[in-house]
Length: 426
RNA sequence: GGAGAGAUGGCUGAGUGGUUGAAAGCACCGGUCUCGAAAACCGGCAUAUCCGCAAGGGUAUCCAGGGUUCGAAUCCCUGUCUCUCCGCCA
Image (cartoon, rainbow, N blue to C red; front, side, top):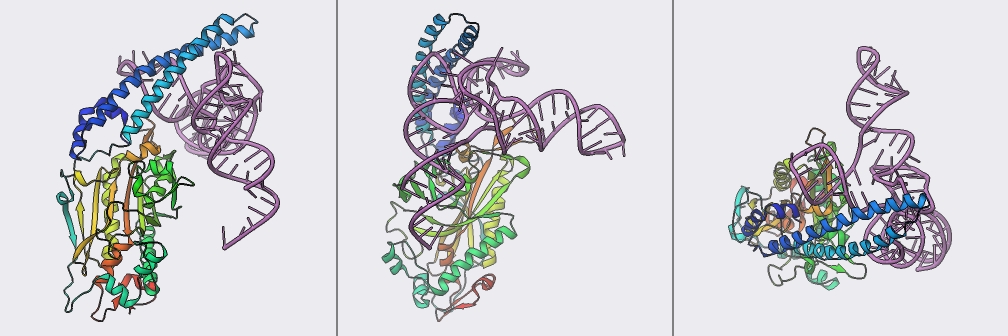
């Protein structure tokens, strides 16, 4: 969530930034008025509480000295009632502010290109070449069928469409990819591996700003008020909820593999073939907590860590800098990585690397204790960044399609062979 | 699922209605001492929010939410979590 103080002190700035994202400023106006009413009441309430506390001390003193305190007690009874009624009104405005704040996205960073839709995103990097085939390449569905490695029909039988079943060398290849990515991030890129729960409670989902705004996109277990995580970002972020991390430990970097679950409500029939859009997929997630002044550098690092995986796998990709209109809710700046799928003849989004600045950490209360030389405020909110490093489903599409042979067999990329134990899928 | 115990500051841990934001110890920071360090001694050491240029002051917070009371860390209710025992079970 945004800082209420920023809205209070500089509402026009906030509205301007939100307009870049296509948000009108009406929610900000509602917050401003609720906030000023709340503050006025808060001052009244605190003044009365000061009186109450003082008189209570006096009553204690009188009682100790065996004096009659009944007048003071009678007076305080009405003061307490007044406090109670004012506090109820404060609570009302708190709720109004809270509800409004939950609908307002993060402000885009000044370097984010202005734009309205995904068409305005800017390609900032391209790596690798399209493969030139001397035969007609087929798509991953055909390859999956020919090699008996993916079985979408049976996955659908077990659960429903969009829940893929991997078989034989397909399952092993998936596992190899995950292990390769985790090993790279832990051994080369300095991340600490975690394996988190894949169900998260409401508080955790709210801290990650996934709920209430996107509640319909989540698989939800009502009996226990738990959500299947749409990304390990949720659970990894919440590792340090309500904590203060010492500056010496920063940056704190985690990578973790989990399955991810997305209902993809509203996108039925859109790119739903095979792995293109699934409800359950596997992903190695990167999360970094760092000092605010370092977060944009860290964003570039994380982008490079994700790209490094694709380069090792020799998969052609491009990086898009998302425009203001296409940014995720919590992101101030975001890069998408798209992989080239030879059979689909299309770019597929395989990763998204975002700097969420203090938007999540504010609600999650993830702070750091500053070096004593860093000014008078001793604690501050950390910046939280997350990135896919990477999601396997679309990566798998690009991987098998790019490495196919005329007989539909698939060559396993060099770096994965020590994980798969075989060099070819046929 | 059944029975019981508990949740206090970075940690350990006192505190069962009134100068308790909270004893004490440890840890940490600064100082004295020392060639330097240790030890000893002295001092400091929560978070958030409001007012204020600042100095400073107010308020809130002893798991969370309600309640009783002039007054709650302390009493009552509900919830969450942790631990122990029993049952069941991967």
